[in-house]
Length: 245
Image (cartoon, rainbow, N blue to C red; front, top):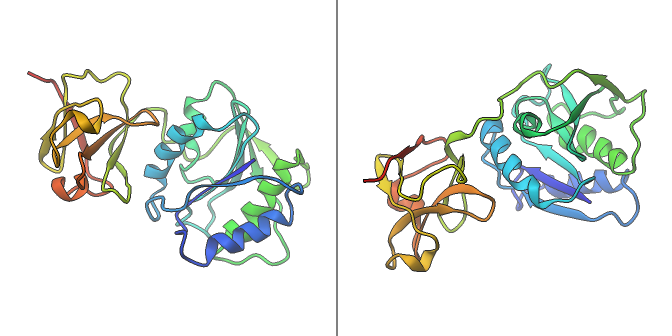
């Protein structure tokens, strides 16, 4: 299985091109999963925390083709990361580093191979997709990859107390894991505070609340409403947990 995680947008020309390149090198019949193509544009830090939360739903040996790459064409490294049996292919710009920091075991390779035709602005198609295809076949050729001690850009394992994603419902996802937060706490974003509720139906229609979402993150939602509009919250806004009274 190969899972695609990008900021390309599902309605633009890029995902299809990358899939064509990927399928030219992957094993016949491989399953492709569109994990997410609306990752916040250019935001490797937010993406890193989303990726770390989402990866738990994918089995071992899944290959994640991850492209949030505002530094494409620059001197930033291109890498393959193995973390607890899963594989991640993408730029070394922090995108893969939260996964790496939280994993029990990792190995990292620099991608040394370059295709004859390499667009300066589309390494997702020309560089990362072929490599992800090879990795999915179990091919880690020494003439294409060079093992290195670890990633150069490291964000660490800590949670991110910021908004990392707003979905089409207006639900506001933070980079904070909910497991250690008391249900009595309040969550503040964009100058507004909301209290905890277990599910949408536990609050009146239109009311905003925070809860533990399906991937374990603190999220603000509104029952039948748009929490992002209610709070005026955007990706990058700080999120703060305060003790309940």
